[in-house]
Structure formats: C-alpha cells, structure tokens
Length: 236
Image: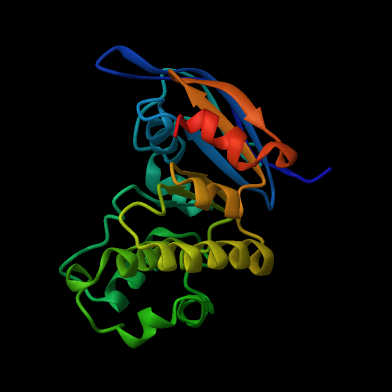
C-alpha cells in the first residue's frame, strides 16, 4: 500500500470561537491528486489554511509522513515539505519573477531550489521569458503560474492549491492542469487542491473529498468523478 503522506484526524478550527471545521478526517497517499470540493462557505479554504499552519487548530491532529505538524508554524511546515498556493495567488507584486522564485527557495526545505529553477521554467516557459518582469504587471494566469512555480521551487513533497483556476482564462487553466499532472508524474509531488471549476476537477482529480458545513460529508472515488456527481456536490 502506498505511504500515507497526510493524515488528518478530528480537526476542529474556529474563528472567534465559532467552529468552522468540525471534526474533519482525511487521508492522502503519496502521489495522489485529491480534490476538495463543495459549495461556497463549506470550509474548504479554512481547511487548506489550517493544513499549512496559518490558522491554529482547536482540536485534532495533522500528520505529514507520521510526523505531527499540528502545533508547528507555517514556515516549519514548509521546511518539512509542504508547499502552498493560496487563493488569489499572493505573489509579491513589486518583485520580479526571479525574485519571487528566490523567495520560494528561502521558505522551502533543505533541497529547495536545487535543480528546480530550470524545471520551473520548463513547465512554465512564459515565466522564463518574463523572468525580469515585475509580478504585479502580469496577468492573472501568469501570476498563477508564478505562484505554483514559487511553491514548486521549495521542493515540496505535498502541494496544497486553493482555487488554482480562479481568475484564469480557460486555455491557461488547461495548461496548468497538464503541468500539475506532469509535476505529480515526473517529480512525485502529491497534490491536494480546492476547486469550484467543474472542468478542472474532472481534468485532474483522482479522488475528491466533499465538504459541507465544516465537515467531510462524503468522498468520491475515481469512478464517481464525472460531471453529474461533481455538479451535484457543487450545486452548479
């Protein structure tokens, strides 16, 4: 059986004492591409932010390859092998593409940046062409490529992406989907992504956890990831 890379047990998270996540359990194996889907307000982004350590946990546990991450800050989780692409991308707008990627080296693990800049440019050749361009002047699709490249250059074993298709034109979304599959196939990076875009989910998800009101309400195996089942969970 493949290694369990992420194990989440009984996760409770609150904002101002109001529970948002209520006992979330999830398990992800090494090399999987797993979607987290559900209606707006279901707690998907809160889950991602708690996994990377940006929101404290009330109860429960988060383990990465059997190492307890629950009380570690975000920078320690990044050094342990977790990469994060937030909703809205959050690139550094006054810095160039190269400078943004350098930040990725700083926040990653001990092998961060080793042989990876060329790989990032191979996956995203437009970034190489614009490597001296200030990130804030780039399109949404280009910034999303940069955000993924910045996370990848940290050499994560697990990459978390929150709404990678948001604000990106369909042709670029398709390219990003193809790159994410290549990253998993060629590097072995495990990927968990939150998504509302039906086409993106159908293109890359091998399994899906469905969230509703702060809980995992059900899961979809690969044979149930089709337009009808996913649309029903998104209420499209």
